[in-house]
Amino acid sequence: MDDDDRARALQGLGYGLYVATTAGAGTRCGWAATWLMQCSFYPPAVAIAARSGSTRARLIESGGVFAVNVRERGQQGLVSRFYAPVEETGPDLAGVTFTLGATGCPLLDDALGALECRVTDSLPGGDH
Image (cartoon, rainbow, N blue to C red; front, side, top):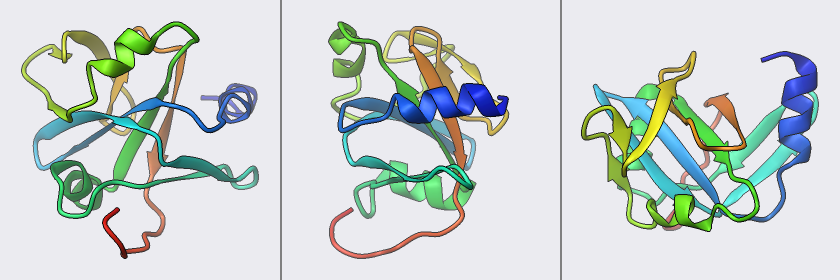
């Protein structure tokens, strides 16, 4: 991803509803994420909250990566498939096809765009 593509993706973030994905320990997982925010333009950084003790939190911790799939207006049906966290069951997640990004995280084919992220720090506390 070049700097212009990354900037456009970061500028598209606001309070919203996203599909986050992660990969680790031989498993891939996706879930509807609302606790996401941009932290920095330079270097580009986002923060995400994952429920403590959940599969997704363990995968983010073990794999050190996650992706944020940004939806288009009108794609509520896409996100609703992930209200309950979904583990990979073959070539799709919740019936949604994906390609693997450079981090190994699923990037949903139907998403407007995606940000692939590497964990640089974490803050334990609370339930997420």
